[in-house]
View 1 (tube, rainbow, N blue to C red):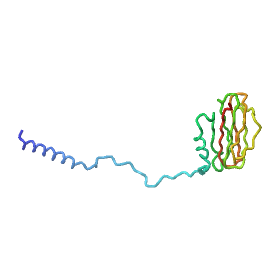
View 2: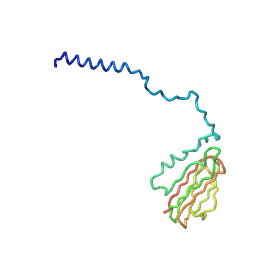
View 3: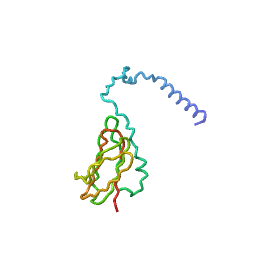
View 4: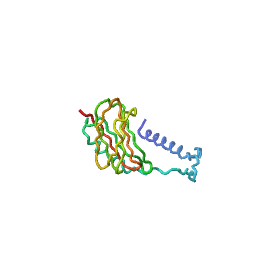
Amino acid sequence: MSPSNARLLTLSGTAIALGTLAGCTGADAEPPSAVPLTPSPTVPTTTAPPTPDPWAGYFDDEVADAEVGEYLWQSWGTFGDSGRVAPHRSDNQTIDPGTYTVTLECAGPEMMTGRISTSSGTPVVDPLSVSCMAATPVPVELSERGLLVELDSDRAPGAFLIRVAEVE
């Protein structure tokens, strides 16, 4: 085929394709589904979202700075969001019988009450009034497996830190 015939066939094919496309108007296409122009009503909430707890993360840096193996167990957090303050309870059922130092710290309230017992509820020390101005180390002798620490800030917002170390 000569080059001029090849060029003529190519141009003819292009012209036919353009002619076919020119006849496409979209009239046969399905119309888009209707979208309502009025927004759907929102359902009002009955409770306000909780106020973020300003004490959240208070002891995070102190916990992160502890040497690996320095403490057998650490538990920390807050007594709750504003308006939802409650006592805290930490239970570690893996701690074996033995001698330990349980260190209690708090920030926010002036004082908190601490109770330390075995996981089954047997008290190992009398209830403690803990000043939130300093760390309070408490010697503990566990006669059975498991340690339960309960802290009560008497509805005052704040943060707490519990650290348990073995006595060697």
